[in-house]
Image (tube, rainbow, N blue to C red; front, side, top):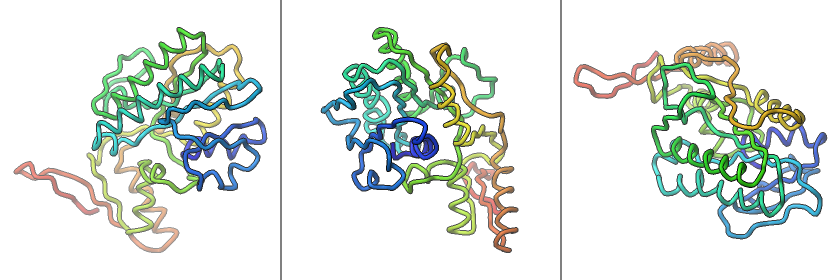
Length: 272
């Protein structure tokens, strides 16, 4: 519950719902954001399975994932968290007799930069550890829910952005947030991929409002949903907008370092 998405959802909706906050860190669980929620300190990878409430838990939201960079640097840890975590989650669902769940997934299961129109019917094409293990987790959850008569919603979300409410490594990995942090800290933004690469972005507020909508829409068909808000721009466009905002606010220029290859196919960075 202390992640980027979950903490934003709790902050906005804790007065509307009775929320059980599952948090690994005891330090983070003391954050005032969780006041008014029932806090359970647990690690999704531990063998212990908690009984959350004597009453019925109407809905469970799962948003745990190891980041893309860390997943691709450590295949074993990616498998353990991005896939193994969902297996433990299913045991929790079964013990607590929860019958409606939402899992946050990623559009990266369709490839890192697919040059096609993506719909729910497009076949997944994961290209790295991160996408492969999350896709495998999606499939495991789907089969579990069908077998156990649990209504499920898998949301494959575009690149989220927004204000982080709790400082963590996770929020630093969010692409747009990372660009802003680089600008504030170093007065420069380094783009480690092609500068003219298009990315889809979606506000964290749109995501949590969609979750609220799903919770309240009783007759909504279960299954897989893609989630974006038609905000697709080149990385060069995004960084230039940050550069303009920074100049207006601080009266100073920032540098944008973009990757390119020279005639000998060596990777270098261009400053703009």
